[in-house]
Image (cartoon, rainbow, N blue to C red; front, side, top):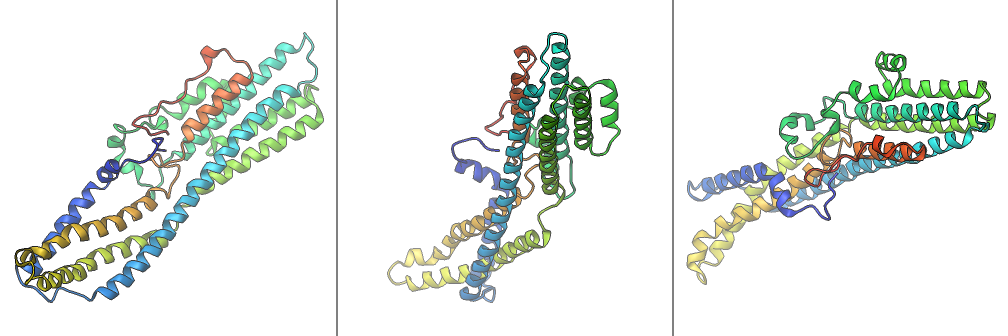
Amino acid sequence: MYVQRRFPFKSVLKWTKREIIFFTIFVSLFTTLYELLDIKWLQVPLAPVALIGTAVAFMVGFQNNAAYDRIWEARKIWGGIVNASRTLIITVKDSFYLHRSDVTVDETEALKIITNRHIAWLTALRYAMRTKKEWETSYQNEEKSQFYYNVPERNTTLEEELEPYLSKEEFEYVMSKDNKPNALMSLQSKHLRQLKNEDKLWEFSLLNLQQLLQELTALQGKSERIKNFPYPKQYGSIGYHFVHIFMWLLPMAIVPAFAKMGMEMSVSHPFISDYFVWFNIPFTVIVIWVFNTMLRIGLAGENPFEGSPNDVPISNIARGITRDILQIIEEDPENIPEPFENKNFIQM
Protein backbone atom coordinates (compact mmCIF):
# COMPACT_ATOMS: atom_id res chain seq x y z
CA MET A 1 0.00 0.00 0.00
CA TYR A 2 1.32 3.41 -0.96
CA VAL A 3 1.51 5.75 2.04
CA GLN A 4 2.40 8.99 0.27
CA ARG A 5 -0.05 11.86 0.37
CA ARG A 6 -0.68 11.37 -3.34
CA PHE A 7 0.74 9.13 -6.06
CA PRO A 8 3.22 11.31 -8.01
CA PHE A 9 2.56 11.83 -11.70
CA LYS A 10 6.22 11.06 -12.31
CA SER A 11 5.67 7.61 -10.78
CA VAL A 12 2.65 7.04 -13.03
CA LEU A 13 4.79 7.81 -16.07
CA LYS A 14 7.54 5.54 -14.80
CA TRP A 15 5.00 2.77 -14.14
CA THR A 16 3.71 2.99 -17.73
CA LYS A 17 6.88 4.02 -19.58
CA ARG A 18 7.03 0.87 -21.71
CA GLU A 19 3.46 1.38 -22.91
CA ILE A 20 4.13 5.06 -23.63
CA ILE A 21 7.14 4.16 -25.79
CA PHE A 22 5.15 1.47 -27.62
CA PHE A 23 2.16 3.77 -28.19
CA THR A 24 4.41 6.54 -29.53
CA ILE A 25 6.13 4.18 -31.98
CA PHE A 26 2.80 2.68 -33.03
CA VAL A 27 1.06 6.01 -33.69
CA SER A 28 4.16 7.46 -35.40
CA LEU A 29 4.37 4.43 -37.68
CA PHE A 30 0.71 4.72 -38.59
CA THR A 31 1.04 8.45 -39.28
CA THR A 32 4.07 7.75 -41.49
CA LEU A 33 2.12 5.17 -43.50
CA TYR A 34 -0.78 7.58 -43.93
CA GLU A 35 1.13 10.78 -44.68
CA LEU A 36 4.45 9.85 -46.26
CA LEU A 37 3.52 6.61 -48.02
CA ASP A 38 0.11 8.00 -48.98
CA ILE A 39 -1.84 4.95 -47.75
CA LYS A 40 -5.07 6.92 -47.37
CA TRP A 41 -7.37 3.91 -47.13
CA LEU A 42 -6.12 3.34 -43.54
CA GLN A 43 -8.98 5.28 -42.01
CA VAL A 44 -12.34 4.72 -40.34
CA PRO A 45 -15.13 7.16 -39.40
CA LEU A 46 -14.67 8.89 -36.05
CA ALA A 47 -18.22 8.24 -34.79
CA PRO A 48 -17.97 4.41 -34.49
CA VAL A 49 -14.60 4.72 -32.76
CA ALA A 50 -16.11 7.22 -30.32
CA LEU A 51 -18.91 4.73 -29.55
CA ILE A 52 -16.35 2.00 -28.94
CA GLY A 53 -14.41 4.36 -26.67
CA THR A 54 -17.56 5.03 -24.65
CA ALA A 55 -18.22 1.30 -24.26
CA VAL A 56 -14.60 0.69 -23.27
CA ALA A 57 -14.78 3.47 -20.66
CA PHE A 58 -17.86 1.85 -19.08
CA MET A 59 -16.23 -1.58 -19.13
CA VAL A 60 -12.96 -0.39 -17.60
CA GLY A 61 -14.86 1.64 -15.01
CA PHE A 62 -16.86 -1.42 -14.00
CA GLN A 63 -13.67 -3.47 -13.71
CA ASN A 64 -11.99 -0.81 -11.57
CA ASN A 65 -14.98 -0.60 -9.24
CA ALA A 66 -15.03 -4.38 -8.83
CA ALA A 67 -11.28 -4.44 -8.13
CA TYR A 68 -11.63 -1.68 -5.54
CA ASP A 69 -14.47 -3.59 -3.88
CA ARG A 70 -12.15 -6.60 -3.49
CA ILE A 71 -9.44 -4.41 -1.93
CA TRP A 72 -11.87 -2.70 0.43
CA GLU A 73 -13.48 -5.98 1.47
CA ALA A 74 -10.02 -7.42 2.20
CA ARG A 75 -9.18 -4.39 4.32
CA LYS A 76 -12.43 -4.71 6.28
CA ILE A 77 -11.73 -8.39 6.91
CA TRP A 78 -8.30 -7.64 8.33
CA GLY A 79 -9.73 -4.75 10.31
CA GLY A 80 -12.07 -7.31 11.88
CA ILE A 81 -9.08 -9.53 12.65
CA VAL A 82 -7.44 -6.60 14.46
CA ASN A 83 -10.48 -6.01 16.67
CA ALA A 84 -11.18 -9.68 17.39
CA SER A 85 -7.52 -10.38 18.21
CA ARG A 86 -7.30 -7.61 20.77
CA THR A 87 -10.61 -8.64 22.30
CA LEU A 88 -9.53 -12.28 22.49
CA ILE A 89 -6.37 -11.60 24.50
CA ILE A 90 -8.04 -9.02 26.76
CA THR A 91 -10.89 -11.45 27.45
CA VAL A 92 -8.53 -14.34 28.19
CA LYS A 93 -6.50 -12.13 30.52
CA ASP A 94 -9.58 -11.05 32.48
CA SER A 95 -11.31 -14.44 32.47
CA PHE A 96 -9.01 -16.19 34.95
CA TYR A 97 -11.07 -15.94 38.10
CA LEU A 98 -8.94 -17.73 40.67
CA HIS A 99 -6.07 -15.23 40.94
CA ARG A 100 -4.62 -16.95 43.96
CA SER A 101 -0.92 -16.80 44.63
CA ASP A 102 -0.53 -20.53 44.06
CA VAL A 103 -1.98 -20.42 40.55
CA THR A 104 -0.88 -16.98 39.37
CA VAL A 105 2.18 -18.44 37.69
CA ASP A 106 0.03 -20.99 35.87
CA GLU A 107 -2.37 -18.28 34.71
CA THR A 108 0.47 -16.10 33.44
CA GLU A 109 2.03 -19.02 31.59
CA ALA A 110 -1.30 -20.03 30.04
CA LEU A 111 -1.96 -16.45 28.93
CA LYS A 112 1.47 -16.25 27.31
CA ILE A 113 0.98 -19.58 25.51
CA ILE A 114 -2.41 -18.46 24.16
CA THR A 115 -0.95 -15.12 23.06
CA ASN A 116 2.03 -16.72 21.33
CA ARG A 117 -0.24 -19.22 19.62
CA HIS A 118 -2.40 -16.39 18.33
CA ILE A 119 0.70 -14.64 16.99
CA ALA A 120 1.56 -17.90 15.25
CA TRP A 121 -1.96 -17.95 13.78
CA LEU A 122 -1.54 -14.40 12.45
CA THR A 123 1.83 -15.35 10.98
CA ALA A 124 0.52 -18.52 9.34
CA LEU A 125 -2.44 -16.62 7.90
CA ARG A 126 -0.37 -13.85 6.35
CA TYR A 127 2.01 -16.43 4.85
CA ALA A 128 -0.99 -18.31 3.44
CA MET A 129 -2.24 -15.08 1.87
CA ARG A 130 1.17 -14.51 0.22
CA THR A 131 1.38 -17.94 -1.43
CA LYS A 132 1.73 -17.90 -5.20
CA LYS A 133 -1.34 -18.34 -7.39
CA GLU A 134 -1.14 -18.85 -11.13
CA TRP A 135 -3.43 -15.90 -11.86
CA GLU A 136 -1.33 -13.45 -9.83
CA THR A 137 1.26 -11.25 -11.52
CA SER A 138 3.56 -9.79 -8.85
CA TYR A 139 5.82 -12.86 -8.88
CA GLN A 140 6.72 -12.35 -12.54
CA ASN A 141 9.13 -9.56 -11.55
CA GLU A 142 9.89 -10.76 -8.02
CA GLU A 143 13.65 -10.19 -8.14
CA LYS A 144 13.28 -6.70 -9.55
CA SER A 145 10.50 -5.76 -7.14
CA GLN A 146 12.71 -6.40 -4.11
CA PHE A 147 14.69 -3.27 -4.99
CA TYR A 148 11.57 -1.10 -4.68
CA TYR A 149 9.61 -2.64 -1.80
CA ASN A 150 10.02 -5.28 0.85
CA VAL A 151 7.67 -8.27 1.26
CA PRO A 152 8.54 -9.83 4.66
CA GLU A 153 7.07 -13.21 3.71
CA ARG A 154 9.65 -13.55 0.93
CA ASN A 155 12.60 -12.89 3.22
CA THR A 156 12.06 -15.65 5.80
CA THR A 157 10.32 -19.03 5.79
CA LEU A 158 7.15 -19.84 7.66
CA GLU A 159 9.03 -22.40 9.75
CA GLU A 160 11.49 -19.76 10.95
CA GLU A 161 8.67 -17.44 11.93
CA LEU A 162 6.49 -20.02 13.71
CA GLU A 163 9.12 -21.89 15.71
CA PRO A 164 9.69 -19.20 18.40
CA TYR A 165 5.98 -19.09 19.26
CA LEU A 166 5.11 -22.80 19.53
CA SER A 167 6.22 -25.79 21.52
CA LYS A 168 8.01 -28.54 19.63
CA GLU A 169 4.91 -30.77 19.64
CA GLU A 170 2.60 -28.02 18.44
CA PHE A 171 5.09 -26.89 15.80
CA GLU A 172 5.35 -30.40 14.34
CA TYR A 173 1.58 -30.80 14.47
CA VAL A 174 0.93 -27.51 12.67
CA MET A 175 3.58 -28.07 9.99
CA SER A 176 2.04 -31.46 9.18
CA LYS A 177 -1.27 -29.84 8.19
CA ASP A 178 -2.25 -28.28 4.88
CA ASN A 179 -4.24 -25.46 6.46
CA LYS A 180 -1.89 -24.25 9.17
CA PRO A 181 -4.01 -21.34 10.47
CA ASN A 182 -6.91 -23.73 10.91
CA ALA A 183 -4.70 -26.18 12.83
CA LEU A 184 -3.59 -23.39 15.17
CA MET A 185 -7.17 -22.32 15.78
CA SER A 186 -8.03 -25.92 16.66
CA LEU A 187 -5.18 -26.01 19.21
CA GLN A 188 -6.38 -22.73 20.67
CA SER A 189 -9.91 -24.04 21.15
CA LYS A 190 -8.63 -27.26 22.71
CA HIS A 191 -6.46 -25.33 25.17
CA LEU A 192 -9.32 -23.09 26.27
CA ARG A 193 -11.52 -26.11 26.86
CA GLN A 194 -8.74 -27.65 28.95
CA LEU A 195 -8.51 -24.51 31.08
CA LYS A 196 -12.26 -24.68 31.65
CA ASN A 197 -12.02 -28.32 32.69
CA GLU A 198 -9.31 -27.33 35.18
CA ASP A 199 -11.68 -24.69 36.62
CA LYS A 200 -9.43 -21.84 35.56
CA LEU A 201 -12.06 -20.27 33.29
CA TRP A 202 -15.71 -19.52 33.87
CA GLU A 203 -18.21 -21.39 31.75
CA PHE A 204 -19.57 -18.14 30.34
CA SER A 205 -16.04 -16.92 29.67
CA LEU A 206 -15.38 -20.04 27.63
CA LEU A 207 -18.55 -19.45 25.61
CA ASN A 208 -17.47 -15.87 24.94
CA LEU A 209 -13.98 -16.97 23.92
CA GLN A 210 -15.39 -19.66 21.64
CA GLN A 211 -17.49 -17.00 19.91
CA LEU A 212 -14.35 -14.95 19.36
CA LEU A 213 -12.59 -17.99 17.88
CA GLN A 214 -15.59 -18.54 15.61
CA GLU A 215 -15.40 -14.91 14.51
CA LEU A 216 -11.68 -15.22 13.77
CA THR A 217 -12.27 -18.46 11.87
CA ALA A 218 -14.99 -16.77 9.82
CA LEU A 219 -12.67 -13.85 9.03
CA GLN A 220 -9.96 -16.32 8.02
CA GLY A 221 -12.41 -18.00 5.66
CA LYS A 222 -13.41 -14.67 4.12
CA SER A 223 -9.75 -13.80 3.59
CA GLU A 224 -9.14 -17.20 1.99
CA ARG A 225 -12.14 -16.67 -0.27
CA ILE A 226 -10.63 -13.52 -1.76
CA LYS A 227 -7.22 -15.17 -2.06
CA ASN A 228 -8.45 -18.37 -3.71
CA PHE A 229 -11.17 -16.92 -5.95
CA PRO A 230 -9.70 -14.67 -8.66
CA TYR A 231 -11.50 -11.79 -10.28
CA PRO A 232 -13.57 -13.42 -13.08
CA LYS A 233 -11.34 -13.41 -16.13
CA GLN A 234 -14.23 -13.08 -18.56
CA TYR A 235 -14.57 -9.49 -17.30
CA GLY A 236 -10.87 -8.74 -16.96
CA SER A 237 -9.98 -10.26 -20.33
CA ILE A 238 -12.82 -8.54 -22.19
CA GLY A 239 -11.75 -5.18 -20.79
CA TYR A 240 -8.16 -5.89 -21.82
CA HIS A 241 -9.16 -6.87 -25.38
CA PHE A 242 -11.58 -3.94 -25.76
CA VAL A 243 -8.90 -1.43 -24.79
CA HIS A 244 -6.52 -2.90 -27.36
CA ILE A 245 -9.18 -2.89 -30.10
CA PHE A 246 -9.82 0.76 -29.30
CA MET A 247 -6.06 1.40 -29.34
CA TRP A 248 -5.71 -0.03 -32.87
CA LEU A 249 -8.75 1.80 -34.25
CA LEU A 250 -8.15 5.23 -32.73
CA PRO A 251 -5.26 6.31 -35.03
CA MET A 252 -7.35 5.33 -38.06
CA ALA A 253 -9.89 7.95 -36.98
CA ILE A 254 -7.64 10.64 -35.50
CA VAL A 255 -4.95 10.85 -38.20
CA PRO A 256 -7.40 11.59 -41.07
CA ALA A 257 -9.17 14.12 -38.84
CA PHE A 258 -5.92 16.00 -38.20
CA ALA A 259 -5.02 15.78 -41.90
CA LYS A 260 -8.37 17.35 -42.78
CA MET A 261 -7.86 20.11 -40.21
CA GLY A 262 -4.45 20.82 -41.75
CA MET A 263 -5.95 21.18 -45.21
CA GLU A 264 -8.58 23.59 -43.90
CA MET A 265 -5.89 25.95 -42.54
CA SER A 266 -3.73 25.77 -45.71
CA VAL A 267 -4.69 29.31 -46.69
CA SER A 268 -4.41 31.03 -43.31
CA HIS A 269 -1.43 29.05 -41.99
CA PRO A 270 0.27 27.31 -44.93
CA PHE A 271 3.44 26.32 -43.07
CA ILE A 272 1.58 24.76 -40.14
CA SER A 273 -0.93 23.04 -42.40
CA ASP A 274 1.78 20.97 -44.08
CA TYR A 275 2.84 19.42 -40.78
CA PHE A 276 -0.35 19.62 -38.75
CA VAL A 277 -1.14 15.93 -39.21
CA TRP A 278 1.92 15.07 -37.10
CA PHE A 279 0.41 16.85 -34.10
CA ASN A 280 -1.97 13.93 -33.80
CA ILE A 281 0.84 11.80 -32.34
CA PRO A 282 0.96 13.31 -28.81
CA PHE A 283 -2.83 13.70 -28.74
CA THR A 284 -3.50 10.09 -29.77
CA VAL A 285 -0.82 8.73 -27.46
CA ILE A 286 -2.35 10.60 -24.50
CA VAL A 287 -5.83 9.23 -25.21
CA ILE A 288 -4.57 5.65 -25.56
CA TRP A 289 -2.38 6.06 -22.47
CA VAL A 290 -5.32 7.24 -20.35
CA PHE A 291 -7.42 4.20 -21.27
CA ASN A 292 -4.51 1.80 -20.81
CA THR A 293 -3.59 3.29 -17.42
CA MET A 294 -7.16 2.98 -16.18
CA LEU A 295 -7.10 -0.65 -17.28
CA ARG A 296 -3.81 -1.29 -15.47
CA ILE A 297 -5.10 0.28 -12.26
CA GLY A 298 -7.96 -2.21 -12.25
CA LEU A 299 -5.66 -5.13 -13.03
CA ALA A 300 -3.27 -4.09 -10.25
CA GLY A 301 -6.05 -4.21 -7.66
CA GLU A 302 -7.59 -7.56 -8.52
CA ASN A 303 -5.49 -9.57 -6.03
CA PRO A 304 -5.15 -7.67 -2.73
CA PHE A 305 -2.86 -10.25 -1.08
CA GLU A 306 -0.38 -11.16 -3.84
CA GLY A 307 2.52 -9.06 -2.57
CA SER A 308 2.38 -5.99 -4.81
CA PRO A 309 2.56 -2.29 -3.87
CA ASN A 310 -1.23 -2.10 -4.23
CA ASP A 311 -1.88 -4.80 -1.62
CA VAL A 312 -3.70 -4.55 1.67
CA PRO A 313 -0.72 -4.26 4.08
CA ILE A 314 -1.39 -7.50 5.94
CA SER A 315 2.24 -7.86 7.07
CA ASN A 316 2.14 -4.54 8.90
CA ILE A 317 -1.37 -5.21 10.19
CA ALA A 318 -0.31 -8.57 11.63
CA ARG A 319 2.82 -7.03 13.15
CA GLY A 320 0.71 -4.26 14.67
CA ILE A 321 -1.61 -6.84 16.26
CA THR A 322 1.42 -8.73 17.56
CA ARG A 323 2.76 -5.63 19.27
CA ASP A 324 -0.65 -4.75 20.71
CA ILE A 325 -1.38 -8.13 22.28
CA LEU A 326 2.15 -8.52 23.65
CA GLN A 327 1.77 -5.17 25.35
CA ILE A 328 -1.62 -6.27 26.71
CA ILE A 329 0.03 -9.18 28.54
CA GLU A 330 2.82 -6.80 29.65
CA GLU A 331 5.59 -8.55 27.78
CA ASP A 332 9.13 -7.24 28.18
CA PRO A 333 9.51 -4.41 25.60
CA GLU A 334 12.78 -5.95 24.43
CA ASN A 335 10.86 -9.05 23.31
CA ILE A 336 8.31 -7.10 21.29
CA PRO A 337 9.20 -7.04 17.57
CA GLU A 338 9.56 -3.71 15.81
CA PRO A 339 7.11 -2.68 13.05
CA PHE A 340 8.10 -3.50 9.49
CA GLU A 341 9.79 -0.54 7.82
CA ASN A 342 8.29 1.06 4.73
CA LYS A 343 10.46 1.06 1.63
CA ASN A 344 9.97 3.77 -0.99
CA PHE A 345 6.70 4.78 0.71
CA ILE A 346 5.29 1.27 0.26
CA GLN A 347 3.80 -0.47 3.27
CA MET A 348 3.39 -4.24 3.09
